[in-house]
Image (cartoon, rainbow, N blue to C red; front, top):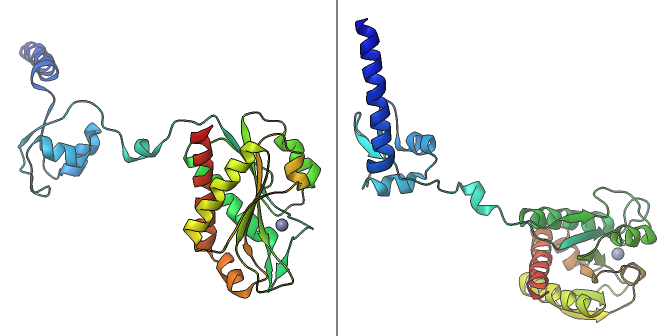
Length: 264
Ligand SMILES: [Zn+2]
């Protein structure tokens, strides 16, 4: 009997306390043994910095047992939520040149088809993290003929097509990057990607040029073909083969896509 009354009273007490806390005073938390600011911040879904600032705490490592903390209201975006972008409507079709039985250029043990794929996969990951829908013509070392590449691309509207290649010539002194295009919008995309490549890679600028490569010509959307460096040149080959260079190429292409997306 006694316990029943007590139970009822304490329930009302808890309800009233919660009601007043929620509406008038805001949520509070009494620090228990073995608790730290990090765990409390995590529990209420607020950042540790915000919780500390809200309570005027300078030393985040000194919390007293029984200390009452005010919990800031409103959810604070977690770091993961902060980087999540709004989905983009522009689809990017990434074409890693060659593949399978078609290795492209091969110099000094370096196969163009492998480099193309490495860069393409980096571009894919980066674009997806920015909210772009991406279609990959190939994601492994397989052969895809040129007609098929265009056919896949032509399934989509509101897209751009980017073919990734590395260059080679019997004149082994030749080096630099160049980007080819068809169409007016392709020209803008090529120009934007090329300028990012030159700025980021500090390579020889061979310019952006109109050229009717069949893979570009048969593709309906704005299309470019990026030649990311000469593997026939020994200096450039070792650069092209490094992951830092490949990452910088991918970054440049992604920046080019973003520039294009802002313009159209
Ligand atoms: Zn090629």
